Amino acid sequence: MAKSFLLLFFAAVSTGRAAIPDPLEWHEAYPPFHIAGPLYYVGTKDLAVYLIATPKGAILINSTLEDNVPKIQASVEQLGFKFGDIKILLISHAHWDHCAGSARIKSLTGASYMVMEGDVSVVESGGRTDFEYGDVPATWFPATKVERVLHDGDTVELGGVTLVARLTPGHTRGCTTWTIELSDGGRVLDAVIVGSPNVNEDFDLVNEPDYPQIAADYQRGFDVLKSLPCDLFLGAHGSYFGMIEKLESAHRNSGERGPVRRRLGEGGAANSFIDPDGYKKYVVDREQAFLADLAKQKEAAAVVKP
Image (cartoon, rainbow, N blue to C red; front, side, top):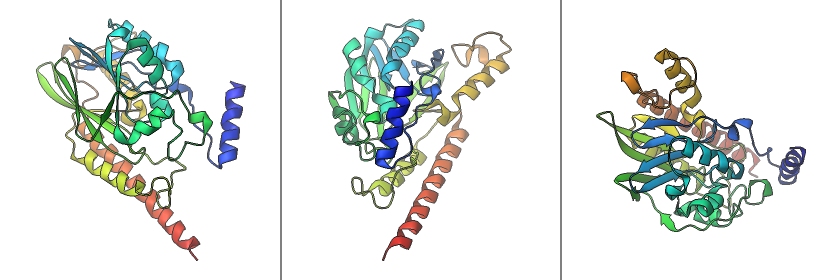
């Protein structure tokens, strides 16, 4: 632990950046649970991983950190599925906390790795071509071969289930928001798994030589997010959509004691992830934060101009 801290500290000092985050919630195991239809949660307490079970095998969205792979496998198997049945591996975006475990999952399952075009170089270089973190060894991960390059609007299909890849760039060039239409309990639900609309602390929105169109890409991403129909609000981090709070609320409202129920919406109870208003508020909040950051950086850039 001390060695890891020192590596992060010296990486931050040498690059002039803030320390690379690595909160406990990223590593802490969390009980898996059913969301709706064929969609399940198998991630940690904050790093979201989604399993989509079909008659022809399973799709996994996000691999998170390398040391989380055994936890993901345990969660998949706890739900009664076979880890080796994962046929397709997807990600939300090519940052280490969402894709560092991909090489190991591919090795264990033989899954086909499908990644949005803008993130392929980062994935296949193990993070070394990332516009912001490429020179920070603490963010590198095992380079992983991509079998299928995705583009905006492409579909991923398996066993009668269809996911749509929506390019919502800015956070990374290939940041991907996944949408899926689910049939659950006689209802048809539009699920949105948000990639990331966040502007990290060190991102330069005005004068980034390795990503000059970053601000325009962020705006494109927000335009896409605002256009999507959403019933089930999900995301690459549980904190995006208040996962823990919603699960605890569902548990309290059910009147049950003991562990949180594994299937939301059972017995007529409301599925706590059906939150279209929360989704809209989240997108508006993140866009306002982006615009505030952009305005502040533009003002600062204007001041330093000769």
